[in-house]
Length: 204
Image (cartoon, rainbow, N blue to C red; front, top):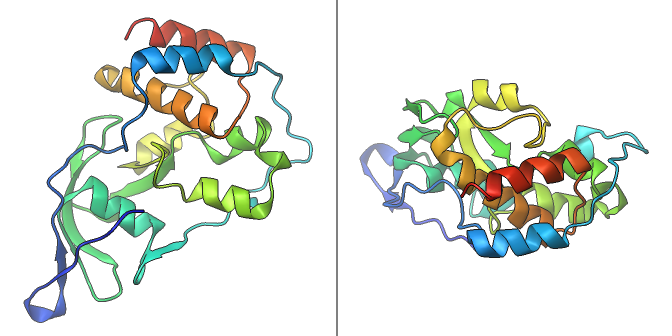
């Protein structure tokens, strides 16, 4: 469980300072990721029945008035200030996918590292609504991260065979996180995805 520390400031604002700049909960290490990758089931993706975004409920209330998006913004930023409803007023963020800094939370999206449609076609179509909601709001695994919205739009629902973050120094953490999430949720990988994951993890 993630606890959010709120400190009352003058003018009715709440300030939340996060000393850690790390965007993601720690994924498994490289050796473990290689083992997990070898254990993932390789299967053809299936979009039957068809994916729809509203099949994954977001955002959940996590603590007080703070929902999942707000908790991620607080976790991933520094000097984050929120109001009494937990809406983010200001802060500093660095998008780990492209290394770009921003002081505007409106320029950030909360990325599902393993996209919701990718999860759907690789197994989540067989889950209950509650299981899909838990996946879409998972703050424990390295699955949610605040990134610049232009990068999120570029990524879409593509897996590592078709898209990787612009910042090459983040490749290893991204691949380790991808494998961590896929393994935890028993999601399948397709053959092209398997080849890409293997290539990237062997370079870490």
